[in-house]
Amino acid sequence: MNPAVIALVATFTCVLSGDLNAQFDALPDSNATWTETFWIGPGYPYEGYFHTYDIASPDTIYNGEVYRKLLSTYANNFSIVGTGYGGAIRDNGLGQVYYWAPGEPDPALLYDFDVQVGDTVEDVHSIWTQDVRVYSVDQITVNGTSRKRIGLECLDQPGFIGAYWIQGIGGVGGLFRTSACPSVSGTGALVCMTVNDTVQWGVNVGGVGDCSVLLGTAEASLDQGVSLSPNPAEDQLAITCASGAPVRVQVLAMDGRVILHRPLVTRTVDVAALPTGVYLLRAYGADGTAMTARFVKR
Image (cartoon, rainbow, N blue to C red; front, side, top):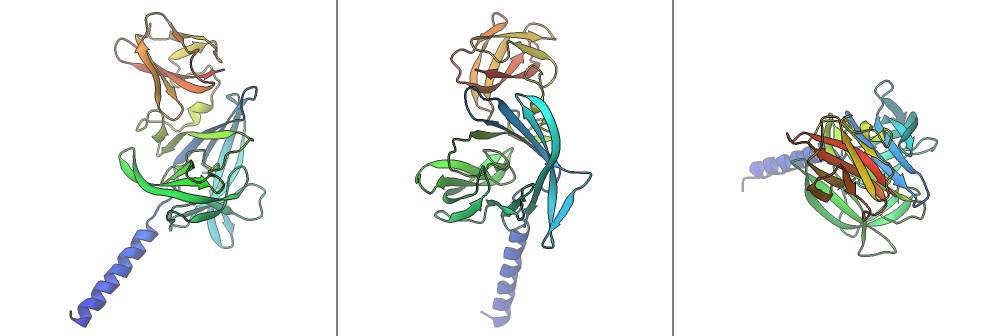
């Protein structure tokens, strides 16, 4: 081959590779929200956290690098306690995201999408920092787009995926609960994530919202069209809809799985067999209108 052609091909390959790395968005850098729950176990309250970018004071600097500041709202048993500084994150464009937690002197690695199976990821931020191993690297479709997914295993539990990182979404255990290792300190779950007011993760993917609605009181519905009682529930859940009697219901886990789907003869649904946890109930009217409310099964 002509040496000039070889040089041109080599130059084009380098430029293309550089562009691909430069355009790798591990997380959105604006207009995104995350809601996660955290629960230690029976007898303990359900905690909720809503994270969004700080519009009023968007940036902070560490060693000359710009970090995007977050606002975090905390809720206890679905009652909002307060909102404050939630730390800052930086996506370096090469697949790594760093989190500078409130009060910490230095940022820590939050995600690394530029990894291979068998790699050890160091200093992963979670309830505490710990090393984990990459168990799988694949692609999944999220809201119509292909995303890179990293499956992680705890070093002392080989062969068991304890957590996933998903490009453009974050960790399935919550935005900051990214580690694969189990903890007696509780279990976290990402229940909703949006970009530009479009749901990317959780119930109603592709719908409109910003996830903050999930931090209302346990009795509040997502559209103010349905109420549930008692809430928390043990056996029977009574349903009242503003638009009339619902004709069928769905019960969904907070990860979007449909747990129950049946016609509704009376205005109650039996939830006795459900495991303890947080669920969404979606009630459908005769005209197909859907109304959704959250409830706790204890």
